[in-house]
Length: 463
Image 1 (cartoon, rainbow, N blue to C red):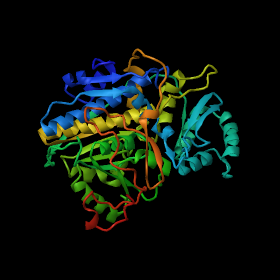
Image 2: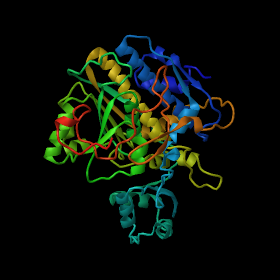
Image 3: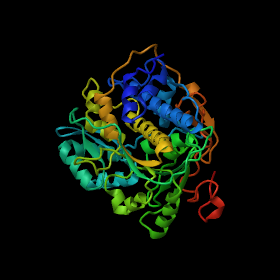
Image 4: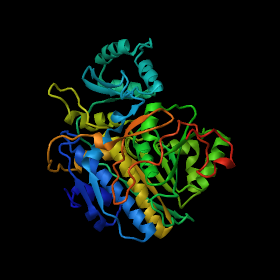
């Protein structure tokens, strides 16, 4: 068992501005060589879950005026949760992780990584390269490979980007280190003081404007800890049932078009009594929608923002995913195979790690708000977590061999059918072992907080 002198845990807790002495209360129960890689993925994973568990324990102690519960994280449970999308079964069916046109491809002078899981990104990739869409992805993969092999990697990257698609050139490690967490206090407001409760985030209202893995993992974790989490999506952008079944646990989901005046007023009403807003919009997108003015009306609000490439520099406004950040940051080169083909981490560890760090940052901000009444502005990025993995996490000794994920899986009935899913890895003394309920059907809940569903019209909740 490893105790709280773990360097990665201390570093992450300091980045979250947590009381230094509390980090000594975190310990890890080893499980052998979990998440094996050249880079210290195991250490990043357990530290991100460790500090999130500690932040939950701290908030529970603060609102109940009791000592901080001990934190003891199980590495096997962490490893299972970090690949939760691979363990997911929906009525016995395994989801498809990556579409056929997503992956590494040879370019004329190197390699590129594409991401075409969403239909609009797939069509833009094909359009950028002048490839007609036959609808047969197996055949199109061969055509795409031939086209990419003729062109320089940087040309592919920029041409596909200009067309609104997603492709990056695989690059060696380099560049300046990025911050893991950026945090600054906001103006004083009149937030609701959190009363004593059995769960750290009980009664906390969270608006979740995130997609894919990192943001939804963060808000799924807040829901586990008692928060009322309402996910808000644009009606024009659909979400895959598989992704939502994995990361929608304990949450509700609605659809609002924030470019529409009526829907924006509904959102503003929700915001008036929210404690936390978690945003996955790229830099500049909030301003384009006018949301920055709405958020400024609530100085006691905790606003947590997430992006792919960091909050400054020429790529700050670009779309991105875990796999693309791995390719552009040098991780894919470090994890390359003996044949030189770029490699990947054993989990989408940038997504999952950033998700737990984001949840930890929100929990810490809630703890501080109990004392100061002030809101907080938080910023994290996948690139920041990649920088931490590359420069700030040291390998730790491994004890034992492999592990069995079975004890860390559970089955739950849901509107999507029976789910087999990974259990949450958050561990402090008395922590909940699973979510309060399954995901509701994406986009079908009314845009109201719990307990208010009968007070305003809207879609019918499926849960």
